[in-house]
Length: 368
Image (cartoon, rainbow, N blue to C red; front, side, top):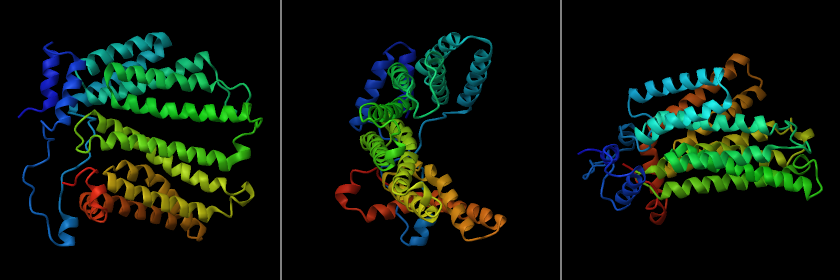
């Protein structure tokens, strides 16, 4: 049986229904369980009984964001990148935006190509930044009294939000939300500097600022989780939106937790607190991995791997190992963690969900 999205796209191309109606009809049918996602079988095969068999069993992937539907997408994306790069070099800034929108009309709205849609969304993001910095040159001194970051940051959620309303690209919605959080953080800092009579904020109040960053990161994670839990079978556009939001929420949670730890110490104690910082990073990454297993999002694992590697690198260096030794040991340990999580994701997640209450596990994405 043909894929529902492909059928609706064909109906849109034949001018039988509008693109807006196609999206609404897709959500309507999916929410009512009319179409079962590919990869789900009516009768589940018998599960292995031993732990070794379960860990070594091969399971289908449960997290498949729709980036590429074929090599055609890759070829078109390469052409888009080359074309816009050349146009950016020889034309004015005002000539690039019509080209981006024209390509979006053909490749995104008409042909529904996923990877070119990501590339064009990034192009809109870059164009917005260049356009706003041309009109509002910002000071790179974070504490400078003449700071024009507010108009710059305000432009991103507006531009990307409008792009999403027109073309329904999940990445544009996620970037709009994340840039909106960045705008709110900047407004908070400016309010504390202006109305709080503290021009050196946040340097003078690292503890308060670190808590605000942590609250913002938790709110971003809650937003991603909201979209995720509304589509636990990963069938609609909400799942792709949640994927991109999780990609931003995972590092935000990691570094905000580290910043909370840093905010509790003075700069004079920073060198002595290196071991404590390393422990915080390792523990936080482990917690993010467990969260990723529970909600079935590998983004929480991949986002913290580089920081985990840096933390392990710091442990070996503090212990006085040679350069070659702690460098290769870091690569070895991180590689082992990646392979264990990657190969055993589905059985590990199944084992993790067994430890949760039924009332909670029933609201999470199902295991295959």
